[in-house]
Length: 346
Image 1 (tube, rainbow, N blue to C red):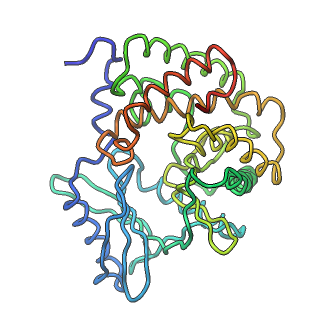
Image 2: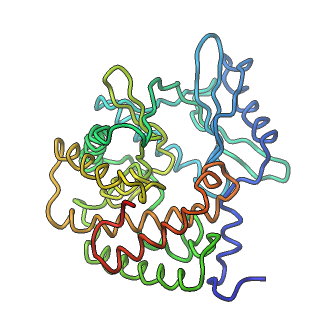
Image 3: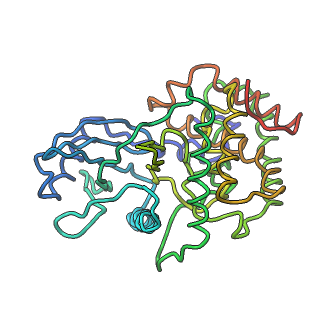
């Protein structure tokens, strides 16, 4: 039975947010995908993680590859193919991003069938070497992240998208509305009625600010949408970007908010943002209106990730956050509403 405080339909939507297949079934699908590639048929699979998708390392003929098995109810095949087209264009500009493999039939996106007719899509990429930075490193590590993000944005603003290009849209409603792509934040465990009221107020204010900011081409376009340190690799002085699965149309500065995902309450978060902005300004200019909307974008992202936690409670990431994470979310909402400053830090 639905809790009366939840909007109608939220519960049923959230059940589709996470792939309910067990690890054995996911591995079996991954093995089926390998059979489409003659040189990978005998490859060894190792499950790296399960989050939005399942990601495997493939070892074959002395080489490594990354296999991404998409969950259902998220991206259509045409959207995944569109992601790969953007990656192609970025590599042509000298930006180091993953490259998908073609199978024996010249396809890059595999469609795998499950009993009952349901389907899953899979893509295999060349392995991207590099060291993943963590939030425990020097805050100055956020400078190259800001700089590479600005390069992506400049490319996005100039790139002519091919006919039929389709990607997900990230806006206020689809991120933190009742019918959001990742479900509704009000389902998060540990929220009291007073917490929900406070967060509702924050959601409303964010909506007003983002509507006023607008979606002009200078502010809103094709973005990575999940460009945090875990999707950055450092290799021999080069910054490499991975995991474009969430890329879509959104506010460019959402990529700043995404850079500190899950960690907005960290004591170093203000310094992270400062260094990210320093790096960004090396490649592109931000005006006063851009800077003024950052608190709303940061709070919007934190609430979006609250919805993600609610609908992905089975994931290792969600379970690792600890019981205080939701307390900090509510605290940051209060800070955003009462102090009108960046809702970050301890």
